[in-house]
Image 1 (cartoon, rainbow, N blue to C red):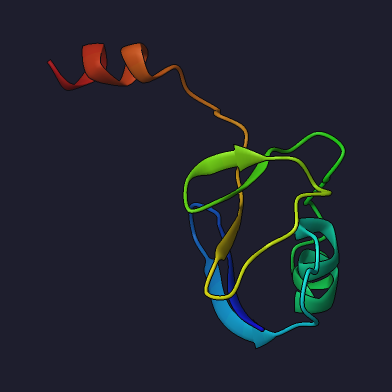
Image 2 (tube, one colour):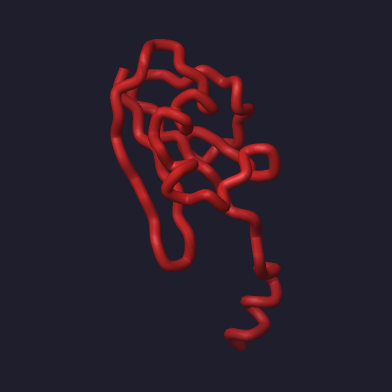
Length: 86
């Protein structure tokens, strides 16, 4: 099946499509994508992952056309950013 995988940092991002075996899990897809080698700072034990913006467990099976996402930790409180803009 064909799925997308994406991860972004402040200064670089990666989005790719790849062919994976049917019923592959999020964790398997991330491993097959090579993202863990490209971005060694990714820690799947601490970072949340999801499909199309909805948080999911690593053992969730993806479907054809899904976009698997790895989410970064929030480094700045969104309310602080709003106060700085004023």
